Amino acid sequence: MTDAKFWNKVAPRYAARPISDEAAYATTLERTASYLAADASVLEAGAGTGTTARRLAPHAGRIVATDIADALLEIARSRIDADGLTNITLEQTGVDTLPKGPFDAAIAFNLLHLVPDPAAAVAALAARVKPGGYVITKTTALSRMWYLRPLIGAMRLFRQAPKVRFFKVAEIDALHEAAGLTIVETGNYPANPPARFVVARKG
Image (cartoon, rainbow, N blue to C red; front, top):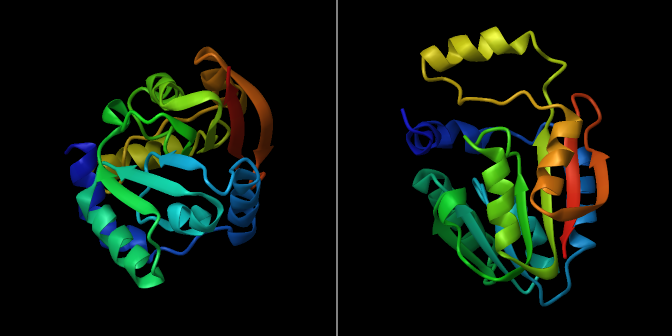
């Protein structure tokens, strides 16, 4: 099963799932918004059901939100329309074929541990950002939760889970530095297990 087919299959269940830590998510959004100007152009990879794009919409000029799963994007579209938001555009694409931009910022939350090549994904985000712009990511670091590996492996056999990478926090930071970016802020929201928040500047 391809990644797109998996996420299309689980889209209704995924959309119904509440945010696990609203306070940590709110902090993530607050810190992200602080790097955006009112007229900022923003690219989002792995937009899912559009929650992040919708919450950042008041802080940006326009947002191009992308995902590989059309079922997730259909849910995103219905929610964006219900909110009456007009500055969000949705595109079905993966990280290897993202819109060219250039953008003032490129964001990817809860994505890097799910893609086949995280280094290439960060490099692709960086390539779409203007000099002086930002790549902003948030990635769960599961290296200390080794006991989940067999459980996720078993779930994958029954097509109930995607492939997951068990990052260390330092490895997530290193992905951004390897793409030629300068890290200007980090944080763990939440702290346990750490969801690593990284803001990295281009140029």
